[in-house]
Length: 614
Image (cartoon, rainbow, N blue to C red; front, side, top):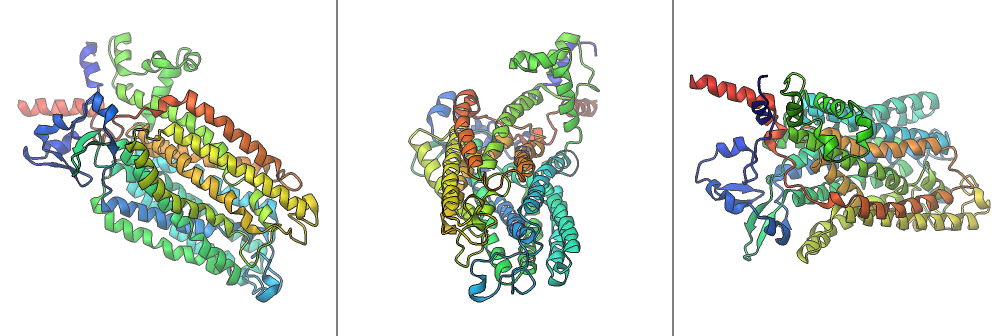
């Protein structure tokens, strides 16, 4: 390299057209052809400048989402089927491992008929609550760790759609395999049943690990608006069709579909109680068949962001630059001085040129990495919420074992979690959020996180009170879980324990998914999304480590500790992370996702153009 300026120019990102569409798509349009975005006509290209909001308009005009096209709805349907099969299968796991075969049952795990089975729980292997907690938590841990691998594969090798397709094939095999340990003749040999069960759930966790980090980003990739765009409604109101609000709306719908699927666990829990575990594990396999059918139907219409083989290596090289020459000390101060050291423009100026074989990213990629690191700070707090939303170890199931069931499955009440989300998701999506935006007080990300953690804290307080009442009314006192007689407290008192944190999930988890997508590098969205999911794995690991400790007579105090931790997080969000409330104008440029703004691509394009000239 002989000079710095040409190289620096090659490492600057190409601008995004005001229409919000990628440059290569705009170039393909006719001069008088209108641009459509989510069912809304934005305007012909020559009027693009008029469609771009000014700073004043961004601050004053109401922001609305783009319309969700049918193929994006199909992605939500795929998520519904995947989560229905996942939760439908995992719902009965605890009883299958924990409880022995019911006395006078049918040998398949179902309870005895008539009055004898009224307060019995379905069961099979009878390994106890500690082993049950260990295995179910192991499954959850793997299902949220493996997505890191799945996200990397999707970003660098296979692309999102292929990764989902492979996960779907693996998952169907796992669902069929899961039925085998639940066959009555296999249950009769507990060691063999346990071995087959463990193999099946590990394979199922791998399937979830390939699907989960790709499906949400694939949905958001379909957003037709890439930058804020002015639109006039039929009532004459000038509004902004905003990509950030679109992602927020779509992810709320997506999360609602997750929980519609999760509610399928009601069917499998009744199946285990009255028929047996073989039916409880077979039903999810049937609903899982929706996935390949829907994927085949919507595939031609989907936007497929191509994998970028070098992107993970680029991120590693960026961090090597940042942490070199005492960067560990500068890291704690942060600021532009720390991050600029990895920017090609800075390197070119400092070193008098660039070696493109060693520095093959652009300045914007460094800014994207910076945004991702800031979002990952927030992800760490989700561990606390995940523990508050379900307890540590086997707390809630131990509580239910000591309560009056009234012929209901002991794990039935857990389904009030998805039911609450199913009810409240449309209320937030089409009621609260649009209303707050219309009156000029949109709920910003850190406000939503704070509301969610507050609801989680209230749920933990209710848990502590109910557990105290169970101990107070049990014939065995503070050893109610293993008592032969149950407490007089009804199982239905667990409803608010599941419902309150469930409402909080809509504020916490959906916001974290939004941050993961909007603040991640354009070519690394699967990986960053998987880091958001990984915090559930950390929570599962903590539960696994403490499963042997969180037992009678100490089931009250963990809830108190979690309530305090949730409350302490609220001022941290509002004070120290309020900068994450500032929306990003651009976060999913298709040209960047396809690597068409990479310096090497731009250089090759210029070289090809020069060759054609001569």
